[in-house]
Length: 109
Image 1 (cartoon, rainbow, N blue to C red):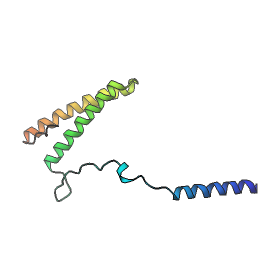
Image 2 (image 1 turned 45 degrees about the vertical axis):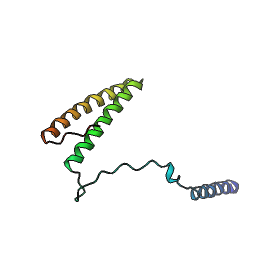
Image 3 (image 1 turned 60 degrees about the vertical axis):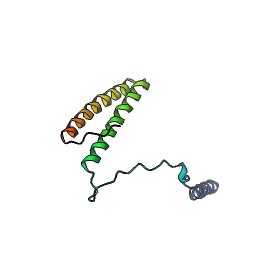
Image 4 (image 1 turned 135 degrees about the horizontal axis):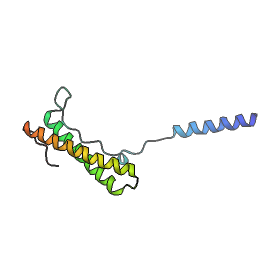
């Protein structure tokens, strides 16, 4: 019994020492921070920033859906990919129409 307790204590000590030795990877291995959009004084997005950000996100969702559709084998994944393409494609068209009415067409991207 005493030997088992000693082994557990030694193992715990080794784990504690190993966790103290952890060093985060150097900054050059970390992904770059996302490009920050300049924000208006109150910390809110301007209309232009919102339109550009929403348009870029929507186009990314459509492209990722197409990628998933072309590579997925599972029917559930393919179904979800089709839904992403359809839903975000429709939302992108609606955003473009509203933005044009407000004279803020999305930047080509």
